[in-house]
Length: 340
Image 1: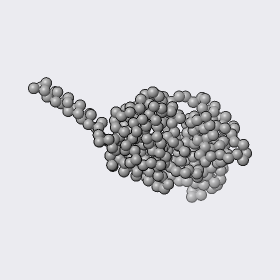
Image 2: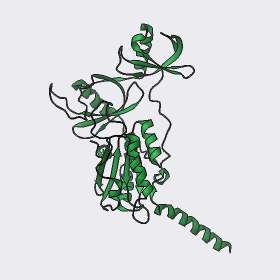
Image 3: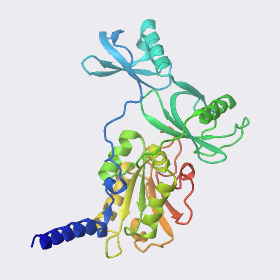
């Protein structure tokens, strides 16, 4: 009797583990041995020393934590008081001694200077550089405002008056030499789990907090060719997950046993675009057009709530459809999900 009970219990456990695999919806992070998406705001910059600032409103004990705008008289220095109050003070209203404290904070955070042909000189703390193609680098950097940015940069210098595309940022030769030197010296990414969100709300929050884009992959049914190909891709490139997580939050969508994506999943994905960028955010194809998928292809949508350059950059759209052939996924650093 005890043996029969053990068999029944084991069978129920086996069925309970198989049943979720047949359900449609978004993948759980645990399915890919990944932790839940981190929703704590990161601190990329080191605050300055706590000191007394002589402000127009009176003295205040605070530390500099960020800098808004281009460094100079028009910049705004962000201070955080000993009680946690944040105050933005125009640099032009500061004394020379206080401005020197800001300069010391800039030096302590080891900002570099990118000299561009479009934005002038830009202070940034370079975290990493990726080779997107033979003509383009991606610079992952933190600017003095404390936010993470991803700038595509031309790998060649342009002649005076030469035209350039809207997206890549042209830089001077000295800046390009500095970037190539940093690229050669940086260490390889270690293996790491991917950043997987389990809902559109979690994906949108994680993207906003960490300055990333959201990539939705339609992997058909669990165990399908598309699903197996993506899992093999992560194993083939041990650094793939770490590289993808540097820029993207993944939403992995699965069909149910009936061979269709659940209606609520498609509805949530449609709403995701409006949450991230309410205007001009219509993909070339909609999720409903992909319910009958081709086994040899993996389709997806790339949502970019944070432009890969400054906010005043011309971006034709914040949402792109893409399709990848299952027999050939490019190397992780070349996989840009139809980034325009």
